[in-house]
Image (cartoon, rainbow, N blue to C red; front, side, top):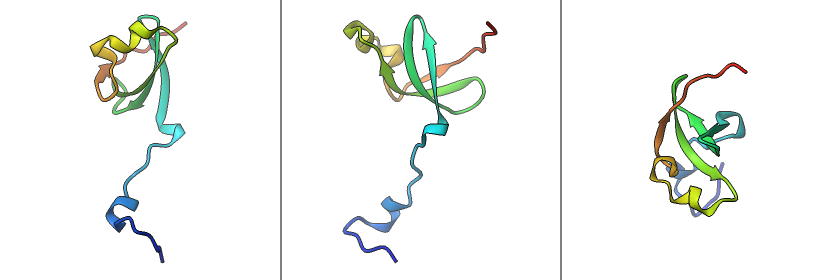
Length: 72
């Protein structure tokens, strides 16, 4: 039993866990991405100390980006 002022349908929402997130570097910017498929993901957050990186519309949280695997 769950006693809360929050409606049960909101408590049952799927939460994003650390194992679903992947850190990727694109154009020198580190992004935290939630994978949708092997080729694409949704930007969750930008990890950067450069304020200009946060102004780039392509990498804003919520945007979908295409990913290409790179073998180093």
